[in-house]
Amino acid sequence: MNKMADHNTSTPANERPQPDSTRLATVLQVLPALGAAGGVERGTVEIADAIVDAGGRAIVASAGGPLVHDLDRVGAEHVTLPLQSKNPVTIWRNIDRLAQVIRTNKVDIVHARSRAPGWSAWAAAKRTNVRFVTTFHGTYGAANHFKRLYNSVMTRGERVIAISRFIAVHVRQLYGVPAERIRVIHRGVDLDRFDPALVSAQRVINLANEWRLTDGMPVVMLPGRLTRWKGQTVMIEALAKLGRTDLRCLLVGGDQGRTEYRAELEAMINAKNLGEVVRLVDHCDDMPAAFMLTDVVVSASTDPEAFGRVIAEAQALGRPVIATEHGGAKETVVPGETGWLIPPNDPDALAGAIENVLAMPEDTRNGLAKRAIANARENFSKSSMCAKTLDVYNEVLGIKADA
Image 1 (cartoon, helix red, strand yellow):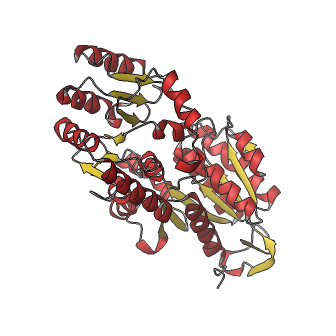
Image 2 (image 1 turned 135 degrees about the vertical axis):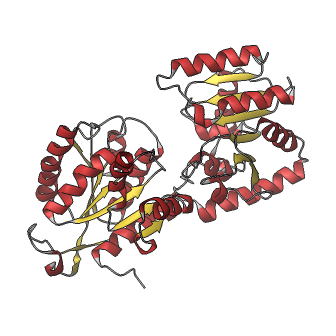
């Protein structure tokens, strides 16, 4: 990833020097915080790693958090700023702070990954005359003109990275972004972690013991934070309709302060007499092992997932998957080949799909596993995501891809 020759921050865009192949690019990624291992945060660290590996300089500005240590580990740099704030005064002040970071570090590209810090980053990039790229991570709420205006900063990049074709269509239709400015780059699975050959039996046994799973019973898992649109209530309804007590269901994800919703789920489990069937698991540090002990992985989201990385990760490990037929799942699941797609908010359909998966003969399951692994490796790898993102950086810098 080559860098443009150093340029004066006041130089007009049409007088910028041409790229100099003897230099390397400096990229500043901007997001609210690095306090959770969500898709935005993990993707930021992964791209920082790729920039450094390509010989560039990676800087991340955020309010900080545990993943700063991951940045240190890959050789990236972190600048702590109050970018998590949605206060208009703080957003305004962050423009000066980010502009200083850009000038001091001779940043070539600013890559905004969230809306509130995106406004500061966009203004700072304009002020310092550097390239500006955005990643559109979700549909966001767009119920009124003010919300659409607030969201629109994520469409102001010279290139707008959409994390799925579903998001690309959303950006074109709702915000009028021309197709030539959009680049679809699916989120990537870390195939060094999500490889069935690298998950030891002992890791799986340890989790099974921790979660009090009975030997020989099939396991159904719905991973995702406890929030209503992730479809935990749909799963519980489906299990009640299934009427089986010879399986275990894991709802894996923290409530992140939604204690009322957690209490609602617990009450619903008890009311459906599913106390011995369903386990609420707050957190899991070893998701590859969790997937490997599971017979079927479910995404029951009632609203469209922008991408839905857990379904791609589960396929990378050869697990059968069931997902709702909207959003990114329509791009990650090959129906009947690597998994099943069902209508959203349909407990009957979910119950039927679970029954079908659990009844699969072993040879059918093995064939599906091979196809699922191939699908994830060919289409949704972290290495592909990183390479395509670096291509976007080179594109906005005017550097042609290597022949």
